[in-house]
Length: 157
Image 1 (cartoon, rainbow, N blue to C red):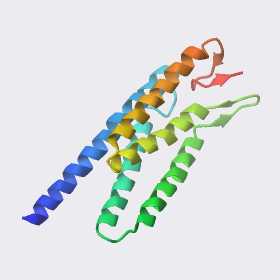
Image 2 (image 1 turned 135 degrees about the vertical axis):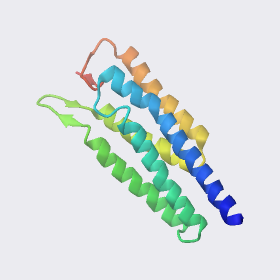
Image 3 (image 1 turned 180 degrees about the vertical axis):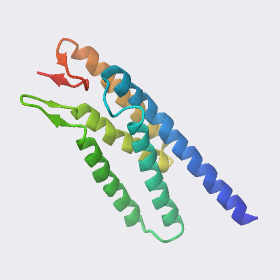
Image 4 (image 1 turned 30 degrees about the horizontal axis):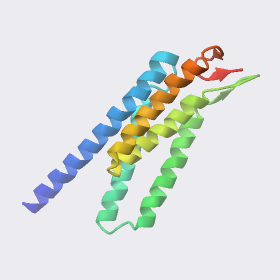
């Protein structure tokens, strides 16, 4: 019976974390897709958040089983930061006179932090990250409204 409750508890924990990672990334995906038409939006950003959450959950479970050390948890986070940065880098395009997609690339990296925070049980941190991320895009749009914007929502000077 302990195996069932352990499995059920792990399933509930993982389901809640993955669901929260998805939900907290949705506002940013919605903002990127609807306001800017960015290719990285409602599908990609929640996937990045859920994927980051899943990898950290796996690391946490391995740590709980004694397979990973605390250093293993830290290495997982470092690898996630690098890998997600690579995905975000794909959103950045250099044109003849300007660079576009930097804000969307940063949003990809930021949603990875949302997922990792959720996986570590830091739901408040993840919520604040989600709100700050969307808030930055809305505030920057208002402050820099007089400048020309590219299709990614980035300012082109």
